[in-house]
Amino acid sequence: MAQLYTNNAESTLASGIDNDDTTLTVQSGHGAKFPSPTNGDYFLLTLTQAASESSWEIVQVTARSSDTLTIVRAQEGTSAASWLSGDKAELRITAGSLTKYEGANDIALALSDEFTAITAGTGKITIRVLRAMTIAAVRASLTTASTSGVVTVDINKNGSTILSTKLTIDQGEKTSLTADVPYALSSTALAVDDELSFDIDTPGANAVGLKVALLAG
Image (cartoon, one colour):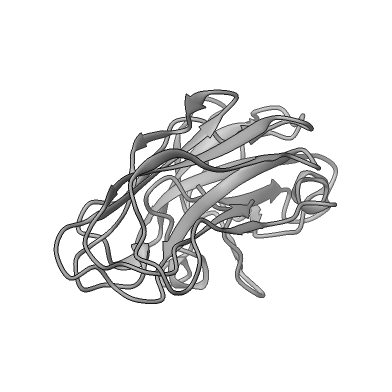
């Protein structure tokens, strides 16, 4: 789950919305200015008056179909409100977005050397989290691809997996980005001094140079 951005994305509402509506529509053709979230990704949209900005609502946009946006209301301490046709709908930098990334660091680790075929096992490496962070995505890669079978990686926080679907690299591939079965995160919050351990559940065959990365978001 990652927060998406694009430059200069702004429009106005094509029709008014009430404070309990979960979709909004921007002006015809303007939807293409905004990202298209999938797989849990999102972007933040600020709603405010057209003539004179006197109040604001930040909404989380979880999907876009042409000019229609699916929204989660009242983000970052704002309140759900009714908005009029012509009111502003703009992708703006928010305090929450900046705070989330302040001090956040990606984590990248080698689970093997660069010469020896990887083997199955638990606790291939164990580390402690230095800064609190939210995991936006995880990745795995190989220097040499498996010649037979899938490489499967598990990531554990304080002894429990954070993956409801494990991270895999398919036979003949060097990256998890091309996996037939995408991973799924069941836990994304990391606190200072959480223990992270990394397992190789299935090693494939002749795979070499396994690395895993956790991307902050």
